[in-house]
Length: 208
Length: 262
Image 1 (cartoon, rainbow over the protein chains, first blue to last red):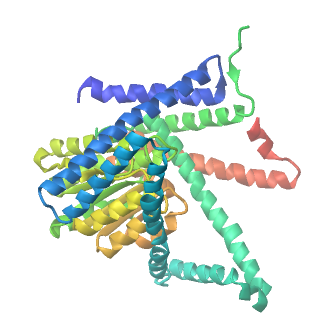
Image 2 (cartoon, rainbow over the protein chains, first blue to last red):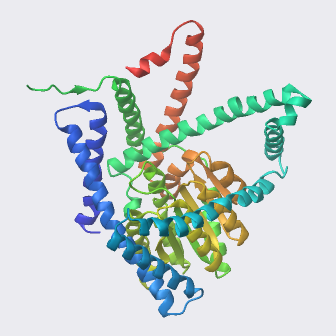
Image 3 (cartoon, chains in turn purple, red):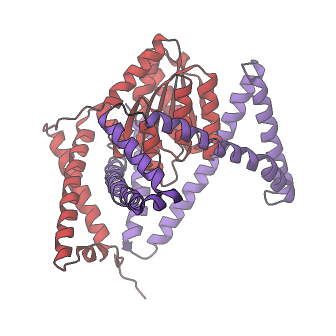
C-alpha cells in the first residue's frame, strides 16, 4: 500500500476529528466556524460519493439486463423508475407537484408496505424466541407473557398486581439491562473512536 | 477585542472525563504493546464466522455481509465502521474458500470503502478475478428500501451465510428473519438496543451491544485492540463503582451528579 493510501486517510481522520471534538469543548475564536466548515465539507464529499453509488446501481442493473440474469425484469423497472425520478427532478425540481405526486403515489405506499411487513416478522421472531429451551429462555417467556398480559385492560380487572408486575419488569429490569448495554456501547464507541483517531484501527481501510 | 481561549462552561467535566478515559485506554494499550497481553474470553459468535463461511463453501452457496443501516456520516458511523473492521478478514476467508461475497450497503460513502476493502482482500489472496464489483450493491439510504433490497439478495442469490453487524433500524428484524427463512447460517450483532432482542432471537449466533466494537480485536488479536478491550473493562468497573458510590452518597444527602455538570 502506498504512503498516500496508508497514511492519507489517517491524517485526514485525525485532523477532522480533533477539530470537531475540540470545538465541542473549547471556546476559541474561529474554531466553531472551522468545525462547521469541516462538517459541510464532509457533506459535499458525501454528495460526490452519492454519484459514485448511482453509477454503481446503474452498472449493476444494466449488467443484469444485458446478461438476462434471473429477475432481470425488475432491473429494467428499477432503471426506468430511476430515470423517471431523476428526469422529473431535474426538469421540474424536487419541490414540484409532479415530483411530489410520484413520491406520494409510488414511493410512499411501497415503503409503507415494507414497514407493515414488520408485524409478521415480529410474530415469527417472537414465536422462535418464546420457546422455553433453557432456563434463560423460560424466564424470557414468563416475563414476556407477564408484560403482554399486564398491558391488557382485563389484567387490572382481574388483579392490579398484573399492572404493577408489568411496570416493574419494564421500568426496573428492562431499563437496568438497557442502560448497562448503552454504557457498554458508549465505552465501545469511545475506544473504537480513539483507535480510529490515532490510526491504530486500520482494518476499515483494508489493511488487515 | 481579543477573545480568550477557554473550556466551554457546562462541558468541563465532560472534557475531563473524556481525557481520563482516553488516558486509561492509552495506558492499557501501551501495556499490551509492551507484552502484557490480557486473556480474551472467546465469543462463540466470532468463532461462528469461520463455521458459517465453511458451511457456505461446502454447500456451494454465497455469503452476504451487511454493515447495517447506519451511514459513515451519521451518529451511527461507529457501528458501521466497527462492522467494516471485520470485512477484511471475512473477505479474505471468502477469497480463500472461493466464495462469492455480496456487500449490500445503504451508505454511498461506505460503498467505496466496501469496494476497496473487498477488492484488496481478494487481491491479497491472489484471486482478484473472483471479486465481482457488481456484488457491492448500493441500495438506498432509506432503511425500508435497503431492507427490501437485502431481502431480495438473500432470497435470490443462494445465500448460505449471512453476517449482519453494525447499527440497524427496524430493518434488522426483517433481515434476520429472511436469513432464517432461506436457511442461511446467520451471525449477527448490533449496538441498537431496540434491535438486540431480535438479533438474539433470530440469529444462530449473536453479538450483543459493545461486542461488535471488540470484533476487530478478537479477529486480529493485535496488542493495540486487545489492550483497548482491557482498558474498556477497567473503565466499566470504575463506572459501576461510581454509580454505586453515587447511590450511597445520595442517601446521605450528597448529590454526585452535580460534579458531572460543571
